[in-house]
Picture 1 (cartoon, rainbow, N blue to C red):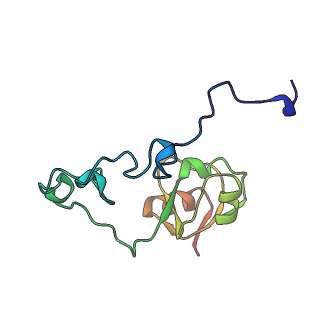
Picture 2 (cartoon, rainbow, N blue to C red):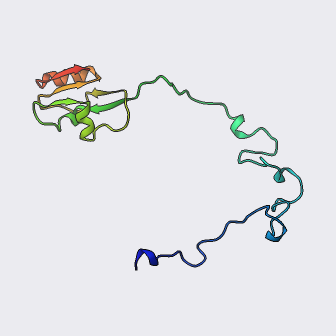
Length: 145
């Protein structure tokens, strides 16, 4: 079979009903909506309409808070840093290249989960106190950029 021989299965493609296009179409004049009434009007009945009763969406109280000034901080743990070679400089560019951090972030913070056996120079946005301590105990440097 070749690309130019492909075609949809019989009955798979059906023409759309052209509503309100004259009496010959079988859907002219009222376009299948009947005479008057709410469902004949534009706007009609939406998905949240409950017959005039206050909709559930408006009855239930609003919850939560979205802080538009919040900083999006990516997190990386010490056991992730242990995968790098001894003596290497670890920065944001390297972490993104290796796939540890994806998407847009306002910074990267190192947390002290796990252990570090290699001497690394880590240049990132923030460090937890335990992470900084473990990096320095392993003989490396934790530099805030």
